[in-house]
Length: 365
Image 1 (cartoon, rainbow, N blue to C red):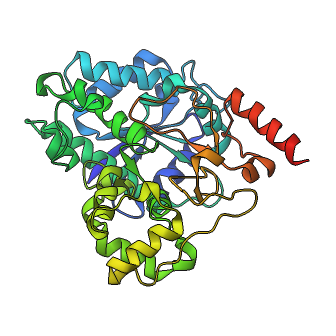
Image 2 (cartoon, rainbow, N blue to C red):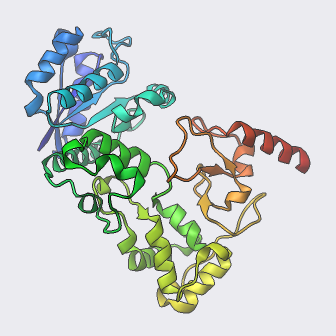
């Protein structure tokens, strides 16, 4: 069983309750490291050095320098930076680092893009806490980190379970040579750049949009169809247990295989669904998605990042990406109606898109 240290400045009773909640599932073991005797940075790091080979990962509260009774003079970001540097400098096995904080603190973290690659995941501790889910995610993280560390060959095709991946794939260039393969940086690439942003990989709502399908109205027919036809497009590489995703290029290849070479890009949603139904018995129960509100086009290729509904990018408004996007990633969009209803916290339009929205709003009025 993989073991994590949980480090928080709250009182011992509070942090022990969190550790106990995660430990109930018996998927991982979380030990609450009492900060009372380790509030000095160098004292804490000496403890972590001594226990390095006994621990498989770290759970950190974002504001270790907050208002808790065991408050320190350093933050989780500083500690995470030390953990990452120590692993590299001393050639120690890399370990997953996870933030476990309340929603307000997570919002603070979201605004600090410089620290994102230090942490593999953020688990929000607010409301009814899904202990079982937390434990499962922590288990997968620790096991996959260990697998990456123990893999001597560092063969990218095997790691990502994609035979079409090779050293010429630009975003994988820093990881081609086994001797310079950095486990935590590769984990950040997968967990943040691949998993959290459309591009090489897409999620089920976007897959449905590119097929022109209304997931809700298609119901179980959609579930049957996607399981029967897109299993080979599903991402099965490292950390796959954390999120169900699909290789975007393979999705289009499968559509072409099913429809005798036709491309969905030039079709409306109705045409895509009709073409699938003409050529594949498994698609007979699918229902095409019809746009709502001010959206009219059915040439869907993306989704509204808030509602997860199909969207033609030409009718969408581009969201601001604080750190920018990579050349192999796609923009994220929201619809006119989503903006009109008020964007949730954490979503912001690019300045030029805000101006376009205001102009469109004025034209409608």
